[in-house]
Length: 273
Image (tube, rainbow, N blue to C red; front, side, top):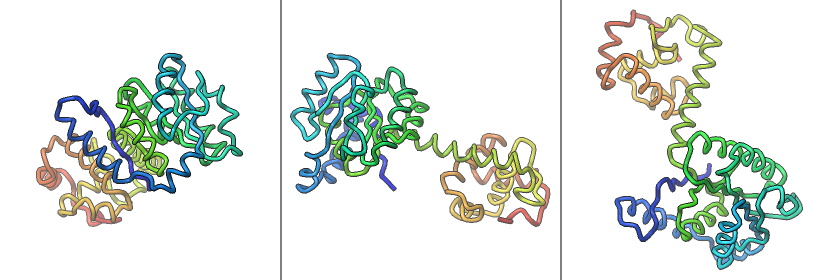
């Protein structure tokens, strides 16, 4: 699985703020995985396609990248204009494209680029992060989702990481993915009703899965044990526990267990998987 790097709100290297620490750590990590000489040589064969509707910004990015391994071979105002350059017969390509204007259409076209060329890398540039849009970009196969306000050095290092197979997205997108996993599970529970856990009656306000997890909390089970019981990830368990605490107005797992002891009826199948 690719590592996901978070560049959310990184400052310019000359900025003075607590976030400088995050910037320096990212740059340290980026330098630690710099391409080897052979990888740099391979990178020279990679075609860089630059798409930016604003002519002034496009020319600025082109000049910035012209001094790097990612000197654009094609610069245009739309993805359609560079279509001939990312076909399956054109080898590895990296598409750097604006995604701040028509995000949905950009994601659709980015997906087509990835489908037509398995070696293509897609880097999207936006004015501000929108997590829902970032999630759409992730689903479309984008390899990086960056703010246009990042420094030139961060942009180049991000491209290095992308070419090494890494993904760069706002860290908060991971939370959205976890929440989506929980919603999918709940949808399945709604369709199957009490058959999800035979003999378990959901407590008012809690789903069937939340009810059985609450019983696990009564038994003192850790998140890892609960995850194994129900074949879900620990991250999903954490989301469920958070929802349980909110619904029963408990501050921690201990309070939740005490609440469950007085509100859940005894059920010998409460720990069933």
